[in-house]
Image: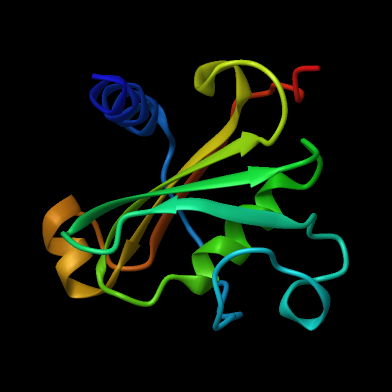
Length: 137
């Protein structure tokens, strides 16, 4: 039931997003905690805590310790995605609160022809929306 609520909230949030094309071509080869040369200096460390690995629509949940530079976290996570799909990315604070209280940003990324066919949008379309929240104590 919780997963269904998450999908419903994520879908509603994404429908409210304004689309923008992003041509970030950076790449990383390993999911999980990102440090050092795998990210720009201003990108906070993050950890992918949940990621769907099959299907044409996939959810990726990312945890961070700070609400700073979330757009860079989103771009870094996007660069790790390699299989054609529609990716729904949720960025959450690693501390305090419920899943909904910890949500800091949402994004959607259309990767490849399969993702484009599923979303009805051009491949490479990227949408990012910060929630304007801070990490709860």
